[in-house]
Image 1 (cartoon, rainbow over the protein chains, first blue to last red):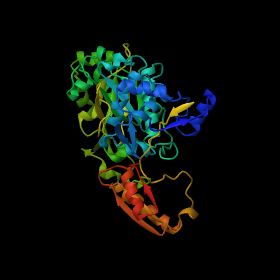
Image 2: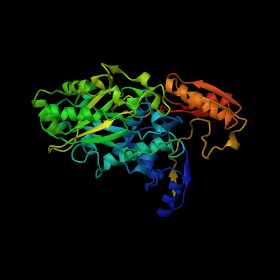
Image 3: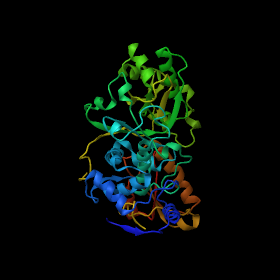
Image 4: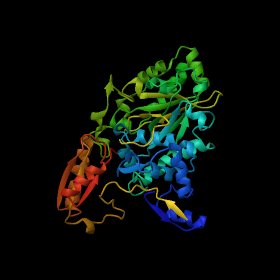
Length: 350
Length: 93
């Protein structure tokens, strides 16, 4: 252990101490006692001093030890650790722009989507209420990510994390793809992994929009998603196209598939229709401070692209089995990042 | 009870301001703007430079460019600290 602190023995006083240090997300945490941290470390079989990544913006070294301490505090079970390690590595790749996410005034949170056998192994919820409360793995892994961002990356709310409003996803956002009820190939196989492997996708979540299935005809549903992608005021309409994420429930995906809509065709459909006539966007001189923003828009035939290419619409099958709506995650100035989850995916130089 | 620290033991050597910056506390100092290379950031710096000089009494304005990053990673802040008294770092928004 690199640093062991002595704090008050009573649970109430210990929780107050941890809160007062600014080490929590505001909710009570599990005190990271040495025995609990050792149990986490044992699950990844690594040296506590091994550095996983350097977490922006302060580039604090995420070691297996301090990550384990944050995992304990978040309520993780030890078997969640490989997921947490992979997610941290994915988030710290330059393309994810974690420095920007950590310091922006926009309400951006990292969202984790898991694929592969790890989902069943740790009981990740991929079905009903997958993006909501009730599942320890979903809740605790996402929360541990937030604590690492605060305690290792330095994103103390109000100090470095200067979000004007923030959003609830900044507490936790982790779920799994419902591969077992999807008509399409799991997301991670599209990355070149096989079904026996597991992976985590990390996407930037600027907002969540539920899209009600107004009508069952697939074109109508997809057009409604495209319309939701065109909301004026999203940051990407000031700064140019950005990747976005769409969660489609199994029943809707199966219907689309039966009618000839492969995942690629869904992406192509949305790409072609998610375009905003430039006349709907604020005029150049009306922009509050970002007078150069129009230079970053990609305009085709008088309309601004919401995403740069079909592949920038990440499609996952998520949710319960009843017919239901789609969850659309507005992206931000960040590319999605991916990382395999493997038993040896711990420690080592970066 | 004993606990293991959840905090990284290293990172940027530049302290982050944790108290409100006042006119008095920065008067006569040199500020470093961390410019991420975007056109819009140029506009922000131009406007803020005028206010910092005229209203806040900043003695010098230095720009530090980070063309490969959307924001200001710690090493950029460290470098900025070598030429200025404090840095103003902007994320994309």
